[in-house]
Length: 339
Ligand code: UDP
Ligand code: MG
Image (cartoon, rainbow, N blue to C red):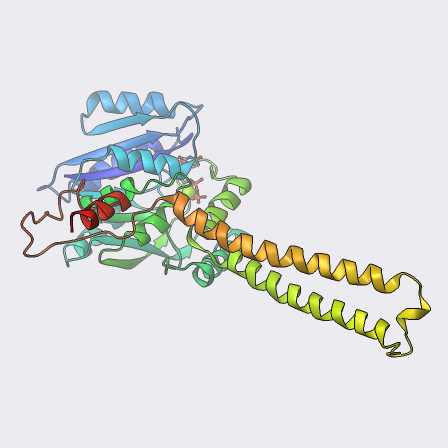
């Protein structure tokens, strides 16, 4: 079965066309069953009503209606959680990701890949948005500890076991394209031209985009905190040296560039106190930031590894068994205890 997951927010003008085009594309995969999961992310227009009407006539269309707007990434996650296909497709409702381009992605999957993600070669959006996207993806690649592919969004085709592995990651701030990279497996990108919106306005406000961008960087990069550590320690050491120098200058009555600290009463003690207290703070902040980074890694509770296959083990687990191929920290420590 192929599951098509579509997050929607106020897409009343496009949802009929989306359904028609996905149904038409599905005729290209006659040997496969299809389920279309529309996740309604708290639409306030007729999106849900139209989807219900369509679902009445077609059992393949399933609707997951959220109680309010939880955001695109939450809606994608809800759709992935409800999908049952052994191939799962994620696409937007605005037809910017054309259903007709899914065929080549599925074909690529048959070449032995587990995830085929779409890379946007051209975008039909305004120059400012295009430039910001371009810069963001390059910044993310520079900062992230993981190589998140450039210019690829959530539009992709993946196998069911990859979908399950993503769903089992317990972190709450979800940057799905990052998690998809994190789980590993054999992944490949295929280029496509991103179309203009079929109807309506973009539902991602600027602030939502900033939040998504920050989730990408903060959830997948430790570097800003490590930078805080290096900065704190470096400036802390320099402040210590400067403080010691001021004290030395006072003690030896040394004039440097025409200035002698003894000329200004109270200057030496003030500057010395200032430099040493800021050095102490910067040191401590640097150390704290390293602990915070590690704490953050722990609170995300991602498994420490995922196993794809076991060979010659008594209970060899099949890779298609989605619930068992994602090893958690607990199961790892249990197996250590048994040894
Ligand atoms: N969307 C959603 N919840 C939101 C924002 C967007 O489900 O809070 C859906 C929207 O209906 C669309 C997809 O997510 O199907 C992408 O949104 P949009 O087209 O606004 O993003 P852009 O293409 O501008 O990045
Ligand atoms: Mg869009």
